[in-house]
Length: 253
Image 1 (cartoon, rainbow, N blue to C red):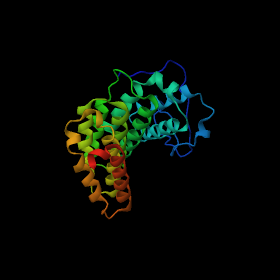
Image 2: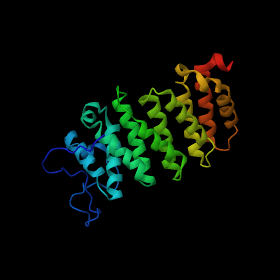
Image 3: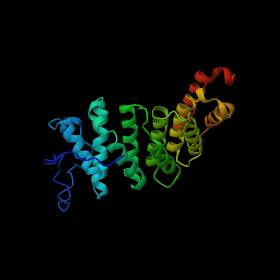
Image 4: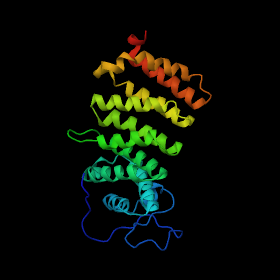
């Protein structure tokens, strides 16, 4: 995934704010302090907006990248953006991977959300490889970081493996990593882990092997989580049990 920049011409500014740092380098895109409602950017051509977002993700200043990520997420949530995203389907994922690998907690959180939105928008494509993204997300999900960033990583892992890979080995690795997050100290991480784990187990049917052999063990783990002190965890575990029952009713008995 190489770095692709757009053609010549003046870079279009995005949402500006009087509170922006006046000492920013002139090459940085100008983003507001919070993600815009989409009407705020309606005067910009979509391709110019994506170009400005992409340019900002190259910047050294973390705040600029974070604002670019917020705007990218708003852009992808506003409508189905396949046609706009297709020309940069290599560049944007490459930049998002770098944000996950090198960014701090907030940047990791925003980049993880963006990865999930990009994968859902573009869908799987033959020969397209998300292996490095999956590795980076697994590392961040189990490492140091804020609960919010870990929740975003776990959720992105679930979406990415559900949509973007048919590799049974990678799928099993993700399932095992997310299962470990079910014992995280933060209740919001545990809740997201149960939800994402059930999602991935629901597509484990074609691969048979180890996952199927341990399906009852997963169900028992979900049932045990029904006694968790956090309501969100109990709710997620109950929903996960329903998914397993729907998909593996014959196995679970």
